[in-house]
Image 1 (cartoon, rainbow, N blue to C red):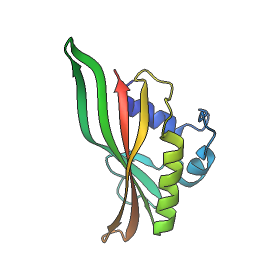
Image 2: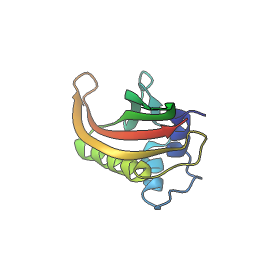
Image 3: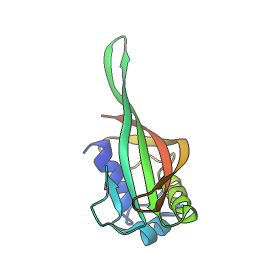
Length: 137
């Protein structure tokens, strides 16, 4: 599997154990079946989270390609209030940051940035979490 598939499986499967035991059940209670790559389906009710790859840098050594990628991945949690969106973002950060989920991609996520957003069309508040995904493929 790719790091994207491993990440989705890890973030959405309550049977997998978070090594730090932080917040996983809270995320499932709030966002079960509401984590989407790139964009949410039309008509999706809030809250939900969308993730996308913003940037990817391959690591190369003097010996050639190292098969290591450094990806910037942006998660945007959308909710009716900023407080709710921020709470979902924090739980997602607690689940993913510093953990190396089991999977074929062998990735680890580190916190990069936190931003807020507002969508005037849906009138939803967004809380953006940027993570650096370091993946060995």
